[in-house]
Length: 203
Image 1 (cartoon, one colour):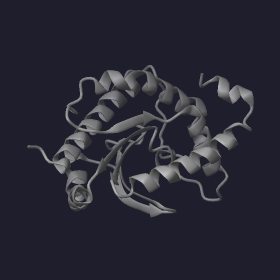
Image 2: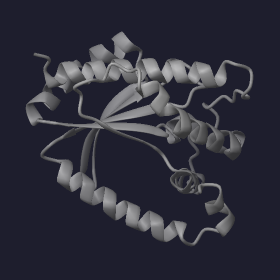
Image 3: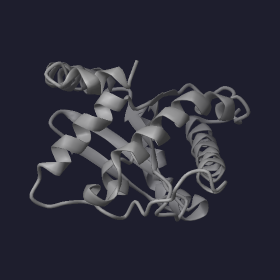
């Protein structure tokens, strides 16, 4: 029987495969301008970001339909346009500016919730998987009541938006969700103050 760490490796392999397949289909056809995402926000047009997000939202299930993810319990979402705008605004206001592929590294995000022992085993293996699958990076985030392992997929290209997989310990899940809800409440209060035309693009 396949263990949870083995299933997680299979999920990482499949997300990585779909990431490169979708990115090639989207960026390598000549229909979409390629922008170096190692630049800061000032040099990456907002329309480039939102167009990618919208196309991914419409297309991702067509790719996942043929993924080898049977028997793996995971969740996923494509980031909303409002959430992207909010994140851009927060980072643009900072004194230090960061590459877009470090800021918008979760336009596609997936999540698995596993027993503690499995998370420990995965942490011991992630460096090997990073090398084997050419992952961008991974790290353990532990701040403000949130604890989770974040894995990023980039496929060695500064022209492809990274994707994210979160691996949660089931003992941290309830608190992580409470923190997520609290953040989203603040976000929606902020979003409600945005000009109406910014909302119209998301309908």
